[in-house]
Length: 104
Image (tube, helix red, strand yellow):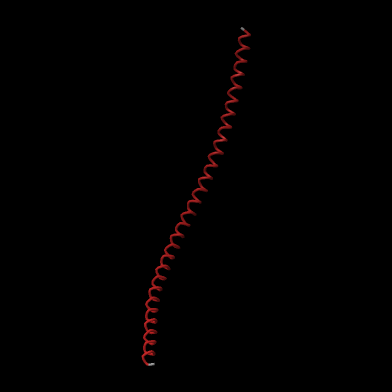
């Protein structure tokens, strides 16, 4: 029985030592994974900041575009007004020219 007990104790010691060695390996793997997760979280935060910045820039550009389009419409309306005034003046000038030619 002593041999069996000694064999059992030796097997137990081998299993315990093997478990400790694999535990250290698992802990280093876990530490490496935690480091990667932390790095990815940092990259994600940076990308979120970039997205926020780009959204703000896009909103400013859309606002500027709306202002430019409003100014374009206002200027087009003014051009139409001036064109109508010019046409009215030409008609009035023709009438005056026609009435002065009738007097001669």
